[in-house]
Length: 330
Ligand code: GDP
Image 1 (tube, rainbow, N blue to C red):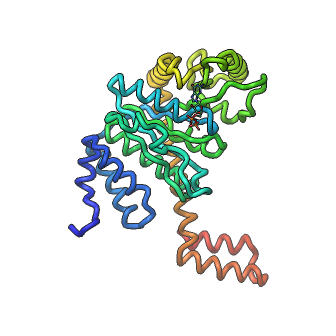
Image 2: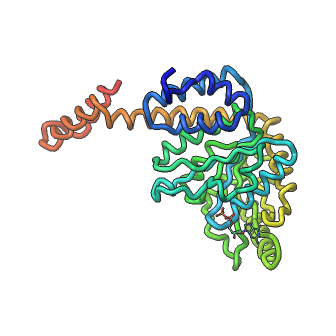
Image 3: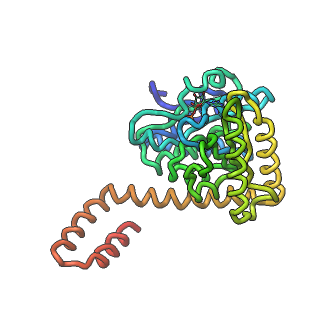
């Protein structure tokens, strides 16, 4: 085998054995934009499905604005779970990195203790990609972590609307992390995000901030009660709780709520139904992305240019030209 070439069979074995270096290399492969890498990535994912069928992790989405305590929470929560013998992977969907070119999420130095834990795997966020691309790669990274035998995959995002929607299509449970509010306002959390949340965790419920955290929790508990109860939820969900990532308090209670909800959904068929709906969503998304990228390549690109000129000159109506182009794609 040539130098630098990827041995997909060896990578499959490494990931299936839970080797973190193999997992890191596998994620790099799925993140690559090169056509040959894409083919190998699909080969790898296919082989893993055969090698470790049915391996499933609990996929947890976690959203919160910068400064709310996400990395502190993930570190404390992750260490609590690895302490219980669980293997925890942390991934990030970070749309802002696409703009800044830098990575603000999943940065290893932020979760130093967790990143040194042999039971944990932390992946810095992919950068320089469009939202659709980031989502696809994160979804594949989740599948790789699952194949590597992680019990829990945490998918982190900053709260900017679009990324939450993506994360909710990737996870089994969605957590929203908030900080105690100064006044009695609901911190401008959009209704759509509230509706996605399974648990709202009000962080920093410690010291001087504790009374404000309790008030904020009560406000959100009230707001959640006003939302329509979702069929995938048992009585009492979605819930609002207080935690302190710094003092590691409330984490066990939060974990118990997550497990209770996950179990209820499993027993009532909602778990499988959600994953099936997500698989369908991603299939349709792949098709959309595939069509969009086909438009940027020949022969469609040239045809688009020709038809565009014909439309500009009035030789064709926009509708007729569009029909012509779409037909050429099939
Ligand atoms: P992120 O930007 O959401 O990842 O937030 P960080 O985890 O970096 O935390 C932002 C700031 O909030 C840091 O100064 C943390 O020390 C602080 N912080 C995080 N969790 C807590 C907590 O539970 N209590 C208190 N008092 N401060 C916290």
